[in-house]
Image (cartoon, rainbow over the protein chains, first blue to last red):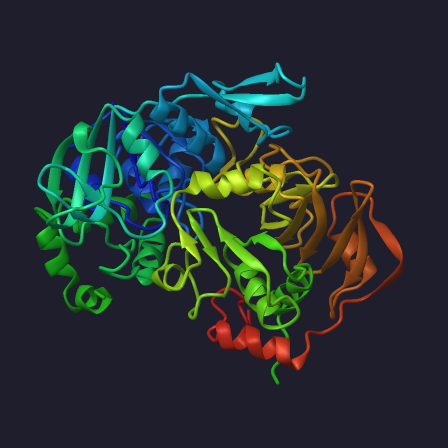
Length: 265
Length: 240
């Protein structure tokens, strides 16, 4: 199954959803997203992932992703396939998916090794002026998971802040799961709710990433994760403590305690 | 005043590369602080772009750890989808962009993807392009900032993430290279370094400008801005 998640890049990353995937021991997932901070690293380390289609995988404020490194360098816990993108190429792939176009021609990445590494792009020349261009095929994720501040019970999303590829990922996907900080009325939905299959009311779902207007980023949590997961044993202990050691998000937030309260805006 | 760190020197140099009125892809870490310095000194009309979907005409009030932090969103000129910002880049409306890299070669090609010959089974898996390869491909002028090390400044990189054809300047922990005819020429070496030191730590045959000189120390005003914005030296690593 392919899942676009963390589509706003550094903020509004639905970690609660990823943690539930880990608790349910989901396997053979394809992860799609430009960056998604440490969410991809966690799912890879937990053995949930077969392939990543992304522009960047790591820990944005702390550095490299230890689990991502172990998977690619040592096959621990398993080998994964990487389908390289840049931010613009994945944004265009999802835009193509969103409008039902087979591909989008672009001028980015000419002279980069990313097209060859990705393997799905085609080098071409413009039929209009003969200039070189790259054709980026559409990505149609099975599922997009979109976190937002407010959603209506029928799936209308009110999203505030920089949105990355969220809208196009939702339009391109076969189905959409919305993870909302609050359930309420939405006047101008970000995209048509017709493909929303579930609205999950899950306050605090994006911690340690920020959700604009609701809570700030927990910078130190990213650094703690970075330090704790240098070894496989350290990673397993971190997952045991923060994912499998809590039954749900409410328990996770209680475990954070006053630290969580301090982040809320 | 305490000794100027390499990070602070690099920020000051990077700030000087931003011209007033330009639209600039800023990025994180040191370039972010360079944007703050430029805005508060010689380039008050510069516009900063943040690829996740933010445009700012004034820097954020607080130090940022990622471009999506609350302080960067509050007071933004615009925020929305990433494709619109990348569209600006592809329309040719972005004069300059900053990027860093793990490795660079003598043509300015940058590797942020993988060390080793097999991308799927690398010796070191690096995070990847992010928006770097797009900025390198489509901004009119590229400013590269990275640590100086013989293993990083190589004759040839293992993987070209970001093509080097638009690189204008390379600012390292040891000096500043200006690109002429697509090749880096050493323009200045930082205090504590020298032409020989730079040569010994560079993996290609060093070309040196006729008027090579020591990198000037940042002015007191510039240092005050840098230290006021990043008082703990989280990004500038003072004292390291």
